[in-house]
Image: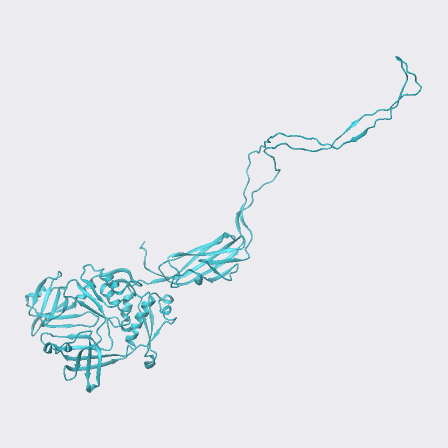
Length: 580
């Protein structure tokens, strides 16, 4: 029986005349179905594109699908219209993660990633159900539909997984579980096996894989940093089959841990030949009602054919029925020793290349910084350069510099002529000096035996020996007191000229270099192409810090001038920023 629902999930028709009803249920992939109606059936009018189709096999509900192409056919048996359907999981094709999205990493688990993807639905048709995994991988999506994004979630897992769902209630529920490990059905020749074909295919055999992720050339992501420096991983079957190397490229990975996990998963799938069993069987479940007689995708079955020496336990990877009404017991089962989902092997590399075309990559850039300045022992030359957060790889950071003479651009002021010096005020000052004076002396002679009589005259003789003097010298001081006073000096209006030019001073004889506070040993007064990578500030994982400035200090032992150049080569992804 088939029921038709509109976009609002309202029942619009029940197709009693539907025939050739078939379905296919591949593991971890999109299920499909088909049916036909007579061309004159009036209910063809309800079978519009993208209407929902609920298919039942007897009383057992198969699942919910939606109509995609339909084909009108005229034949000798009459006119028919055939309809192809896809599972409603395909509704996730209708929404996208536009542009760039990064989700996951430490503290963000598998269930959180699935929630993030389903939150991007325009109409919330799906919700997260049971998630048996608690991984913390980082995922990067760009212009990806939601179904592709969901199917990418378990790709790095190194163990089996299975997508299941419940579409019997709305919103529909999506689960990511570990498939059952016990045997849940048997296929035995002579009981329910009509035929079996075993295929051993070594064409995809691989024992060594070189995984590559985001970027290009020397800037392409490898697993060296998380794999002991080796760019490849080997399988434990290399001794049996030899070294068979393959290169796996998926540029959506920009985390080495996630890339390594994905590579290990692929290697586990490819390290042995893939063995598949295509079985034509009769499903006896309708007769026996025994679960061991029912074949369900994802379950483990045991195949026994004593004549072909086949006795294996493997997982059902696909169940197909072509006519559940005309031949309800006929079933084609594909069983394999390992799954082959839509992205599980090297054969998927071509699709990965196609996907990478819509994923932004980046380019290698060379950023040069030139610097020249005077400096001294207390004022070092400082050069700062920026490392953007979009830098995926930093290939090299090199410093070259020369020490030169201190440089000035003007000379001392011109001058000449007399210089006037004065005090503004003064107090008492004592000075000491020596001096002498002269006295005139005359000798007068009076003859003897002259009687004295008053009132009379005597003749006399005055003798003059000629002009002469006697010097008398005596040490002494004179105290002189000067009161407070000022001297006024008048300077006429005038100008002084400056002599311009380039004048060099001393040149340092040694320098010290620090990068982000870390000393660089053995530096001379001039160096070329000094590798600064070991001295740059790093984060907890040992990676050079992004999204910030890094600082170089060059300190001379005297006045001087430093002329320096820093060259930074880095790989920058073309994400972030605007479009100006």
